[in-house]
Length: 240
Ligand SMILES: [Fe+2]
Image (cartoon, rainbow, N blue to C red; front, side, top):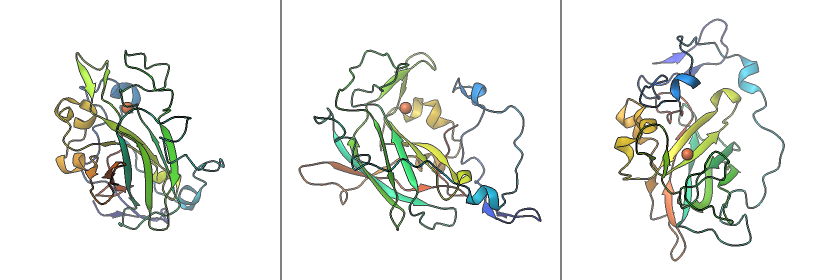
């Protein structure tokens, strides 16, 4: 679809391409009927108040917020990785100075959360949450460990592919994106209704990071690149 504008709208924007976003009511993903509206969505024009409002709180970013391996006394268990990329708007322009937040399971696939009680160990040196601001080129960078795959109760023998959750605010609250970053070649993609809920194959692949030897550091960590497009036809799928 093209650019959207009308008399009441003073800010135009690009809509998502058809089938590039998750199916909101997706039977195979059991919690989608509880989370999503059952009536058709109404598209509202965006005015100055929506597109210029404040986007996040005032807590300063701490030095180790973008390094999840240095938030405790010791190093966490697991495979150290560097995750980096750029945040882009619907015109492909970098989005500087925007908050990028991540959360993830530890190397054994366990979250530090009371609802995650499956029999995998917690790691006293890993909390699994980080945040950073993009630089003037829209780039962000995290050091973390590769998350493990974990079981869930969606259906019999259900396991999630390894993933890192992302939340990005962009220039204003309306461009907020919540998504999941996957790793290349995960055999669980074919069985995962969260991944499969995005109908378009090309859009699904926008959620998969790329192994990057240039980002990889010798004797230290493997590098993965994950560029994020907040809106428009090339947008990274929004988690349903
Ligand atoms: Fe998760």
